[in-house]
Image 1 (cartoon, rainbow, N blue to C red):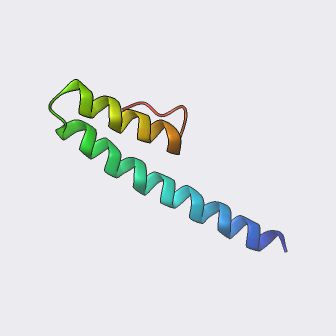
Image 2 (image 1 turned 180 degrees about the vertical axis):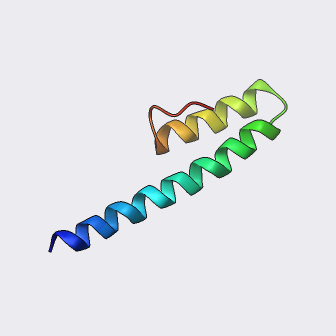
Image 3 (image 1 turned 135 degrees about the vertical axis):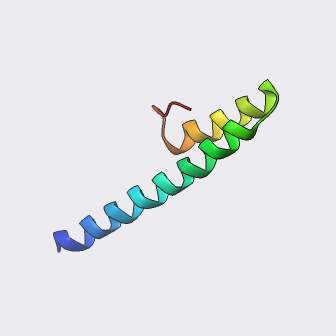
Length: 52
């Protein structure tokens, strides 16, 4: 039964990485500080220790 939990964990990790990748791309394209702050806040909800 541990196998099922492991696959869920792997799925969560993959989706988190994909979401953070998109947020990093948006952060790089953002022009003003307001947009960057919003993107950073969203990334912090996904992963609290993220650096953009």
